[in-house]
Length: 409
Image 1: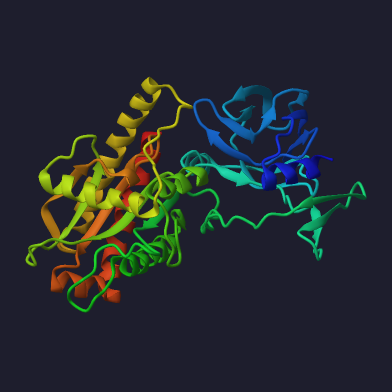
Image 2 (image 1 turned 90 degrees about the vertical axis):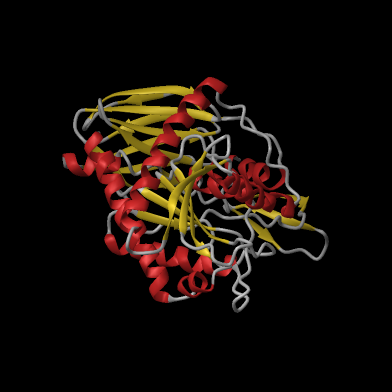
C-alpha cells in the first residue's frame, strides 16, 4: 500500500508513517537503495577531501543493512532535517551518471561511473542530481459524481474518495546541459500581472524584455558547454520573489542570476548595474530599487517575511557571509567582462536588501541590464544584438567564476 499512502499524502495532506531504509547494496557500477515504502524524493551529490558520494532521502528514516563494495569502502547512514542521509566513502573518484526509482517507488538505483580527477572536481561544483518516483501509480477513473475511484494496480484494491479541484502549482523547470556541469539558474524578473517597468518609448514592458534576455543568456551558456542552465520561468507567468530563489535552491544551483531592467525619473539615466545583497542599502538609489522590487510580493498578496527555522541563526549568518562574498566576486567579474561590451554605470556594483537575493547558501546577483526610461537603452535591450552582448558578458564571467572555484578546490 506504499504507493497508495504516498498518493493520499501528496493530494490530500493525509499524514503517513515515515519510510525506512531497508537495504543499501553497492556493486561495481551501481548503488541500490531499497525502502519499506514508496519514497517521495531523493538527491545525490559528491564531495572532495576525502571523496564521498552523498544521497539524501526525503521523508525517510535511516536503518537496515548496508553493504559496501566496488569503489566504496564504507557506507554510513544518519538523520538529516526532513529525512535521512547516506554517505558513501569512496576508494576512487566515482560519479552518478543516472538514477531512477522503481515503478513502486521503493527502490532507487544509481548508476556509477569512474571519473578522471578533473571531471570529479567539476562534479563537486555541479550541485545535486534529483530523483522522484512516478507517483501516479494509482489510476484515477473518472466518475459521474464528485468522487472518483482510485485503483491500486498492484494490490487490486479500490477506494472511493472525493477529489477536490487540482491546485495549480509551479513545477520545477527543466535543466539543460551535461549532468556533471555546475548549474546556473537564470531568473527573468517580473511576469504575469506584474509588468515591471514600462518604457515611455514604445511601451515595452520589463517582463517581456527580461524573458527574452534570460533566453539569450541560456542559449549562449549552453553553447559554451561549461554549465547546465535552467530558467525560473520560460513564459509569461508571475512568481513571488522568494519562490524564484527557492526554485534555484531546490534544483541545487551553484549560481543564481536575476535579470531586470531599470527605470528612473531622469530620462538621461543610462547603463547597467549589478546588485548583490546587503542588509543596509548602500545608497539612496539602491534603497529605492529595493522598495520597488520588493513590492512584487504585495502584488501577489503573499507575506514572505518569515525566515526558515531549520538552521540556527549563527549558521545562517556564517553561510550568508560566505555567500555574499562569492556573490560580490561574481559581480566584479561580470562588470569586468561587460566593460566595453555594454554600457555600464561608473559605480556599477551596488548593494541592496533585495528579497530575490536572500538565499543564504546560493551566490546570487540581480543584473539591471539598462534603463527602459532611456530611449537608447530601451532600443538596445529590445534588439537581438543588444541581448546577445549581455549574454556574452555573462558567459565569460561564468566561465572565469567556475574556473576559479575549480582551481581553489
